[in-house]
Image (cartoon, rainbow over all chains, first blue to last red; front, top):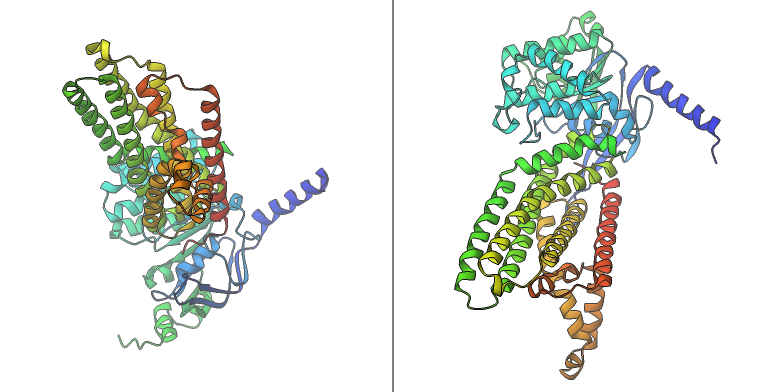
Length: 267
Length: 270
């Protein structure tokens, strides 16, 4: 039996872990194979991948389609479980729902609730994260106006275009100001103005100390926004470095990306 | 915990009642009650009995449609279109997801079927006024018939949630739920027949009898929640039958929800 004192100590330890860890995400030799059921072939997706995302940085995670990016995100969010290795988020295993109060996730495909309005989607995210209705209203006012999205505030999500549905998702993700943002292709479907607005939002959150895990196929965006990068291909981390080292070496991410995946970039 | 799940219950409910299926069910109720008025005018006798039977059957069908098409399509979007990733990426545990879905759908059923039952009861009241001599059944029994039919719908909802938690395709879950609905409506009678003297005399194999007993134990006996005969004939409903049936329904639902939570615990959302 745990005494009250030891329970308090454990709580204290967890609190310290959540907010004071230097590495917000740690992948340590993680492997994952999808078991698709009887009569279907198992599909190995990740092979011993290791990387760390430091607190307050924007970490770019790039790779071609099917490389293992979405699987990695699902492991961070505890939607799937690793076969081998450890995944730590805020220093603990991601199976505790409470730590996800500090996580904001923007999915690649905006499959939201069709009959809700962007405002209701934001309310849902805010309330789950523990915000009051007043706080949600105030933050909604700010974000809807920043993304020039006021006119769509009360429309049903299913009536919105792909880009506008993406904006609804972005507002819902950023609203609770989570300590860790996982943005899976945040620029998908956005026009150049939308991309600029979202880039500014990401950089502003970084300046305020939030950690951002970003995947994108737009390598120029990744290079411009991120402090460090990892390139994944065929389920293995092929390259990982900081932007500073990249600049020092006089190289750019796009060239390294094509080199790593074995494509010649003649132009 | 309810405070944490409340936002999820609310959005599930909003999705449920804004879905076109919900308004379709209300229209279906209106049309079927209009048909009820027309049909009883063709009946020479037993007007009340036919009207009540028709109203309760149509209500039961409304519940089934709402669960399969409304809740089923919503679960389809969650699982097949991966909206579930969005919900589970938030501070909602998998147990809370199941509870949130259940209570959200329960409120949707309560709202839509509530409206449907008001339409049905008003129609029956109108029929009673126009045929006072042929409508002897008390409204208390009819009202109880509606409540029990609602309970039966909740049970089917739990069956759908359970199958959605153990299958990877929501379509399979819907098919299995339909299967359980039909078996559940006839399993009680089949078991009674298997245990009767008539079955023994007809040479009904004992193996089949055992199989039926096992199936009866597993599949919900929906006949226990069907009060149509009592309501339509104005028969008094025994208190012990009411208590037993309500307890049966609640316990069965609780078991299904607990099993769904357990199955969901280690499920992967690829």
